[in-house]
Image (cartoon, rainbow, N blue to C red; front, side, top):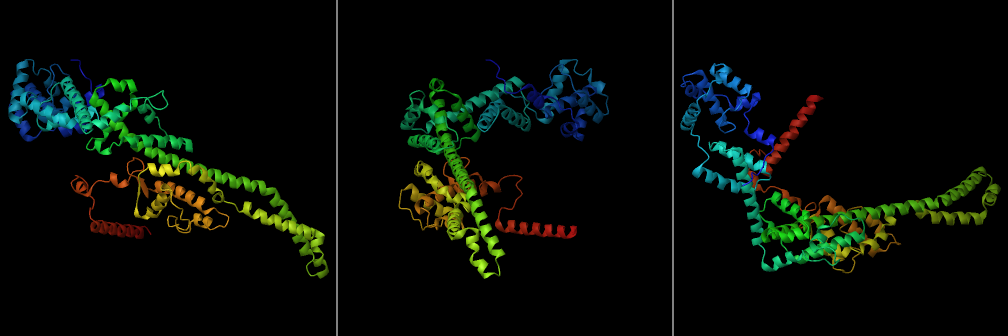
Length: 525
């Protein structure tokens, strides 16, 4: 069988080479009094330092010294200094191979080291199989295997043996996970998943390839294409529970494989593996596309506000000349009136002298017309976004499983009105924050209340998703934050978590920290 490489050369050196830095030497190779007593039972100096070196190598990295292995100078110096010997005493050690084997036998008898063979090898292989599912990398699995062998005082086998064992365990774990996912699929679901490899409606690609071709859009056409994929995935009716107890990194691997394969490649692989990849992709893409729909809605809302702002600015710029002329007219009238102050006759003729009464009527009418563009805000034009939201709003709300906090319940109720195409309750504005500009705009007489109410709901949904007041039932980015919190019972058993887990302790600790900060500030002042 060809050798399966799991580690790079640098990784092998890190795991299996003798340590040379001072900290590692002190941690692993410092000899205790009883160690030195056993070592001193050897007669010659070379045997003493050789015996000690074999003991240190068995402790860390946990392997046997190879015949003819070059010992780092730092190692021989450190061990020799503890024994009161010279590093050169190591040179004639184990000229006879029998001596090295005798010392190894003595070390095994004294310290209980065991070879990797027989029953122990089978036990370690079984343990390795259990760890393989949780291992994220081959290097990580090798590391935990080596550490476990050290803890059990089992002498490490050769590097190639370790790599082969870990590679086999990883492959076996992958097959078990694929079989576990496939076993949760009934015949109807298997048929639906396999049908994804059939031709899509466009006729030039499979449904599977069409589903994975999604990205954040910028307009209603992109949004509706995303919603087509959401509807197609929902029609499969595959529960996310199919991936329960599957390690997250294994899910990522299966998804990456699905996104790398083309249809022909998927059709050629074994049944369980193909079904596991298809099921994982359906579940993961459902969450990702839901996130993408929300992101696209966010972009559309931002675009609507940008266009409303452009319209507001454009109307103001178009009215600038009229505003200037009107101001000049009123300035002339005001100047004439001020000059005629105190002279009743001059005051009576001031209007005729400056702009005439007809001209004044024109100025007042023009000023009345210019009030709106001069005071215009983007809010005055956002109502036009209704044409955009009508193209996808109702469909989006029906496709997404939106949940929310208690504070967001009025907004969810308003979204339900749009989703179910019910009568618009324009007077129901509980979903708007206090002193909202939306409320002020809805009260204006020229406003189409029904249109603006829908636009307000869609824009508030964007804000609520950003603040996580509302979330999606099955998503990644826009999921409920509580799902990523560690359960209290699990937190209590976590080692090294020195945090108060009850409200009383937390309040007491917070009060202490506040008082301590006040004390520090007073000392600084």
